[in-house]
Length: 394
Image (cartoon, rainbow, N blue to C red; front, side, top):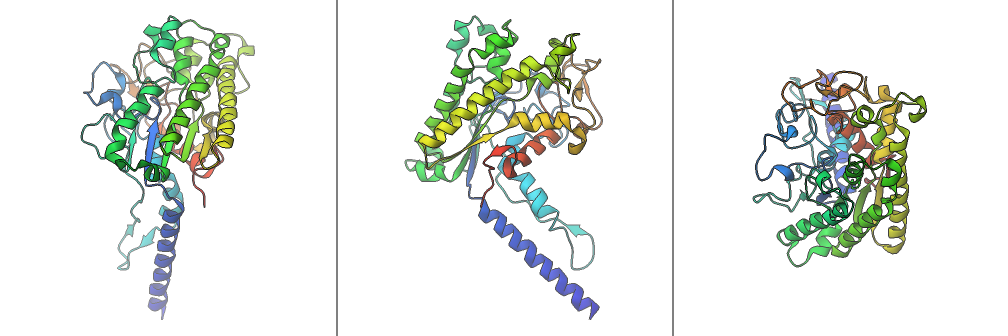
């Protein structure tokens, strides 16, 4: 009787588990993910023509956490779009934990195989299949075109020319191989992630001698360019579009190291530089206003604001809630000091090394976050509270 009950219980759990998987799959309608952006989500576009050794993130220990070697991602492992494409956090929390079952013969455990979409191939790949998605993001990308920076005397601060206008062209070039002449219905069932954009625009200005206040005078142009890009995607057939804001750069080791001061009034209560976070906040507020206007204009579209800023800032405020023991010190590099960041001794350079546990750090290399942080961010985008509305919906 005990054996029969045990067997019956296993069957019940298997049925429940299978039903959960079906329900989860049904709730997610997307047949592909198409991503645009910069180094936060680049999965290889900068390296499609080779892996230049002078680029630090093509060198170890980049990629060590998940892939075991560098993959042209500016991270120790996966980035946000990797988790979105595979809906990893959703299935990790909803399926993996509930569907951990003992085999019928009692010997060990098995995991239900993860569902979802494959890792997004870089759009510049000549051999990839883009029907399940593609990644147009490229490291160094800006919202604004090269002429904008030339007009500001900042051409030398933009080291890669992959702005929004180019990335949309790249998507148009691959779209024929994805959906031929009838793209609108296919793209209507795809998820588009548009950004973040703006971070490198501000980096160029700030590292080019502009003050944060001066940089903020160009925010409306940058946000208008992002908004116009979203409209172009909608015109092509996009319906569900996620538009991320920029991050709290005043909390990042690169800014804390280069622009740190001895005046406590320059810092907020958490230790972040206020003027740089104010620049990010201003950008995000203007972007949210634009997204609201776009949603009113395009009633059939679902335009979601993804809040990078609040998600990361909460990690700085409550690191223990996310498993972090440090938020301001980089995991990888040989800079030493309070933030372990030195622009001449960055992660990937000779002599640089990584901490023993990247998952305990918010910052990977002083500029980009760890895989652990990106996974937390993805959770907040898929299910809330850091995407409005949340990506996953009934």
